[in-house]
Amino acid sequence: MVNTRSRSLPNEEMEGALASGEDRIGALPDDLLQNVMSFLLSRDAMRTCVLARRWSTLWKSVPALRIEDDLATDSNKFVDELLRLRDPAPLNVCDICDVSEDSDTEDPETFCEEAYNRIAPCLRYALLHQVRVLRVSAPVFPTDLVLVSSHLKRVELCHMQFEDSLDFSSCQVLDVLEMTDCNIYAPIICQSLRHLNMKGGCFDNEVRYHISAPNLVSLKLAPESGLTPLLDSMPSLVTASVESSEEEFHHCFALLSCDDGCTREETFSVVLEGLSAATNLELTSDDLKQRVNGTDERYAPKKQSLPSKHLKIVKIICGLMKDDARVYRALKMLCAHGVPFEKIDIQ
Image 1 (spheres, rainbow, N blue to C red):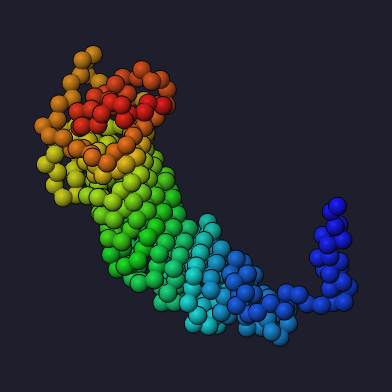
Image 2 (cartoon, one colour):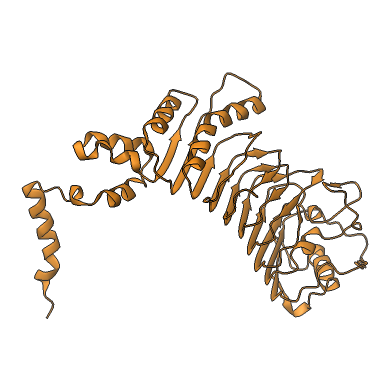
């Protein structure tokens, strides 16, 4: 027999507490309340100061900054006051989202520089207070983005544009870097990085830059356009996924320049060169142009760039048909670089 009374006790107790006016939330310890408040936008967390005397200062030590405002308006004054009044407690998370749309300038570059100047104080404050997770979503063009931290473990960037080096070497414990809809015209450097994910945005169309992250375990590159970067040695790599809207962006050509002076042969696969340690590899291209010269195109590289001893499976994802000439070409290229046919999965 099921004891229905035991199940109803919590509801009865809750109803009794509500009837008596008992403050159950107020009975929670400060650190637990502040942890709950850390999921609120900072503007809302600050508003809790009017609830009761005890709440008047709780918001000051919440271990998160979450700012989602039009920082081009009076909201910027609120952010200044927030940073001034907050206690110097360490931060777990700093989440900045500038939703500004209007500007006095019609120059896109000036607009982005102004936007960066608005979020820069928050970035400096977060790094000074040992932030571990940093998220920035803003249409900015940071000309002097330098992150120095021995605590930062995760960085997520959205809608930003980079033309100076993305050097995270001064972030000794940075583990995850995610970039969404970012335009990158610079090398990416980080010794500690283990997970790199880029979705949308673009790389340069004329210069092929480097990604130097020797401790990567997982890599996902899915830009909308641009030359696939040169990938330095990644001996710890386990899974890799590289997508390109145009297949030719995976290869070297005499007319295209690498940032360090490329001596590779024409049609050399820069993707395969950098992913030789991967256990699982996925290459995707939805290019509609078929770069096939004749019906018996031969791919005979001077040397193997992918003598992989670790690769377990390669996926070739076809947007249209499996008998597409590009699939045939990819098979020949992979086999020429030492990938056994039985390890190739065509989907």
